[in-house]
Image (cartoon, rainbow, N blue to C red):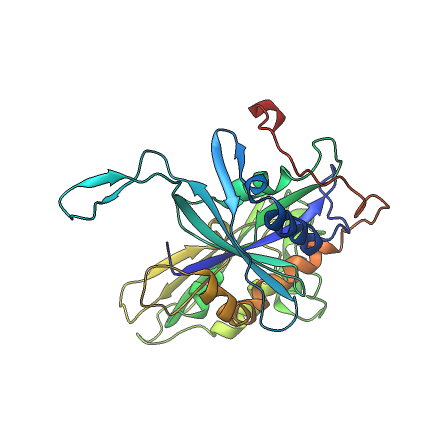
Length: 333
């Protein structure tokens, strides 16, 4: 199990993929209550695999977040050393590969450990949805929070030697800039105006804008903060922005490297300074808030934009909670 957690959106969505007002924490509490009254009911077989949650970990004060270990039964018959130490004997109970998730109600964000053979986020989503009626128009959705790691590469580079912005002039420019890029005199607005003129006046289809040092001194660098400000004003997801390539020197190396921001999408994660090989439930309980604080600037805008689409309905928290589950075929997943 790796010593980091990855970040996810966790919410109930309707069939149109919009988040709803159904309460995630209330749903998780229903499962915990069921585990106390009928522990066998929380083990569910989904698509041939058996899953179950373990006892919840709550903060020492309040219920702002919850930490939940969730396991998948290991395949094969496990063996343990016999009392004499000379032989092995079959273990007569199930053994699980476990990941640990945490859900925070303030930020509406989930984090998950990354043990490869344990349940992944998609398996956990399927498991939780077994507690809902298949005909319910609202289901739980867990999706990775992704960001462009190339921006971090630039921020931590020793020197930046050039940036090349490639624009597709055939695409519309309406979403080329981010909403906060509202200063008409900014460089991003200048690029947008130049691109429109190149398309309208010269009939161009593509334009490359390169800012570089040329034949500068060996240790020279472009202004990294200004480059990051410019990239931050451009909407990299826009069709108008075909690619942004940055050449840089990193880690004391004298060899130039490059990163392409369109290609650098990755799931947001936080690493813990652990000497061991895993993040346990108790550790995550005690260090969750530090992880959320450390990565707040990367996930907050993403979650704000996601929950701006939230729709409320009378059926949000008036639903059937399924206490008894029978495995369905793959087509009913």
